[in-house]
Image (cartoon, rainbow, N blue to C red):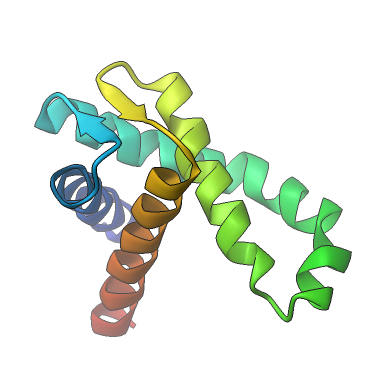
Length: 111
């Protein structure tokens, strides 16, 4: 149930990001839902590998490099989902920031 809730909140966050950030385009709720699912899968499979490979940089930047990792994951999801476009680093960064805040709020209420 928690996974489903996380995907729905992620879809809402993606849709919200498309309205708040120029450079993020979502054609429909369906595309936002698939983008959220893609982000969940990418974070499950790719993120652990990227975190291990970039651990020295993350330590040197006191964890701030994790924002760059989140940005890359958000941008990567746009390659797998039709109807979800992210144009540029700044748009991906802001979209990832919105997703992070949404997941943080969800965790705050469900934990």
